[in-house]
Image 1 (cartoon, rainbow, N blue to C red):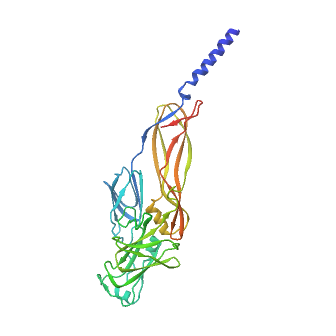
Image 2: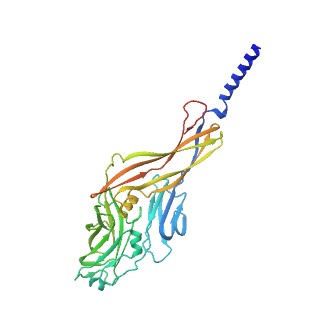
Image 3: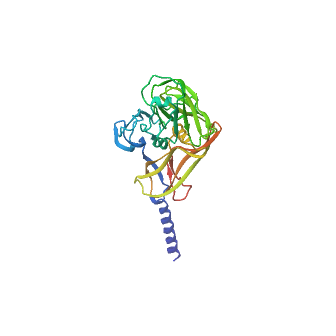
Length: 371
């Protein structure tokens, strides 16, 4: 009986040792076999348009997504309605990024126009209510008494405002690295010149203290955008064309790039040896305002200087080397940055692309690893 008991015990031990080497209990390694490296261009606008990028065209929509996009190219935009201004082409350069997102403000032609004679007699022209809502700015033009107009003496006066688009013709770095275009002013009559400078006034809510100035379309003229109280600014122009409002700002923690961190999410999946597993997760990129001065021009600054905030989906395929349960974590890096413009300050969380990591077991019979 003792011999039988010994043999049974030995068999049990051998059985246990055998189970330790089964596929189900082997350390699982996840071998990356495929990554979605396609480039995606995402475009949104305030009105329907035809969008063309590369060999792809999407018609009569307010948003378009171009997958498998070329690394560099030109985006053309044609508004569906003739009531909107024609758009200049936009240069797109992915520069190693997998997603580029653009917010395009297409300005509607003005519904308010004032004759030159009435302007010289003291009437003021403003942008219409629809444009005020689009741009977040109320803009007006006043002509001083006795002004002589040359260059364009017949066209009526009007003004519209809109945000520039990254890569567009109005994107200028301004006078220093921290500067960025935040607003475009389309002043008509285009080409008009004045013996006495006309006054353009902008009512930009919550803009007190911000360092703003105006730059001519060709970048040759830089004019102060003076504060006149209650979030209003004014500039004196000697001629009309498109004028660009630029914000001068500095990143206060530029050396450290702000307080770095990660948003981490954990997921668990069951895997089978040699059967590919596809995982998809969200990735945030761009800037989100988090505090301080909040004005439409601050929002535009973050879009054009840092990048529009966008959430996209990344997809990766792995092949497990054994069967079992795997845990992976999605890491979403970010930096909390502080900015100063004039006497105003604001903060933003700036996201860079997320990535996934499979856990590597620390001994035992289960766990995983990634490569």
